[in-house]
Amino acid sequence: MGNMSKIALFMKAAAVGLTYLVLSHAAWAQSASADDTARFLAGMDVAAESPLAKFARDPGWQQHARYFDSAWKQLERRQLSKIRPWTEQNLKQRQPTLFYMFSGPDFLYADAFFPGASTYVLAGLEPVGPLPEITERTRHSLSSLRASLNTVLNYSFFITAEMRGRLSASQLSGTLPILYVFLARAGKTIREVSLVSIDKDGLVQAPGAKGAPGVKIVFAGGDGVSRTLYYFRTDLSDGGVRQSGFLQFCEKLGAGDALLKSASYLMHSEGFSKVRQFVLDRSRTIVQDDSGIPLRSFKLEQWELRPYGTYVGPIAIFGGRGEAKLRELFRKSNPPKLDFGVGYRWRGWRGHDSNLLIAVKKTPPTASQ
Image (cartoon, helix red, strand yellow):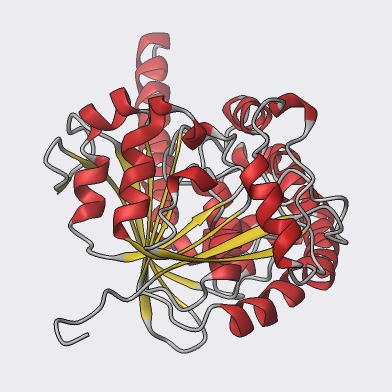
């Protein structure tokens, strides 16, 4: 056989082999479910028949799993096990929809404070990213995932720029890997994941529509009831929401509750008046720390205000955002203390300097009253 014939046969064999590898990889990737992937990223066991089981035998993944086991054990002890009874005692009437503005991918605290919601709407500037896929390359990005979660696990909030920088430099980019970890560690089973976007009228479209890009995740907890989590990347300033269709989407969900935590005092500014007014108009109950809606925006004839913890003013980076009226409310109310830390003044986990405000919309009087 001549050299040219040998080369031709070699090239043909190589092409066949490459095609086989591509097809095999595609079939493998399709068989790794979103729930499998979430459990793997969260350092939790996957089923023996899962295509990810072979990666779970890797010493690097086992170290990753030990890290998350330890981190979640500590988080449960100092935070979550205390937030749940606080929520049960103080949030008696909850709506099926939760609006969590300026949240980033923080499903962790959305679930802790509002575990019974059927629809969660989260929003922030962090990109959604592609659907996570575990391969030989991405499994080596687990250290970046751990690092990006460090502040929220220890302090209760994300440092957005730090998180964005770590994840954008790794194979596991965007917020989806973090959402997957939180869902898995919260005991949820992911049933369906789809990338979406919303148009200017607030209608959910396929990815690429001119509006806010996002993700829709259908999941279930231990009760087996299907719930939906939306995360949208959107600018929540007045100029941003005018273009994105995000608030129009939220309006279609009707009344809900709201969570505002570590929100950078943005709604103290007139540049965020639209999202502030939306939360005030559409919420039945608002749970927030002092970085959320300023006290002056609550009309006392419409809202019952219940403070908790201690108000000592903003941390230095947000100097000038202190509120004399809020300080007076806390002084006069002698509020119950918090036994968990939350927000920028987390103080480790003891909650000595943390504050929360529950604002409950008063029932309007009937015609006969």
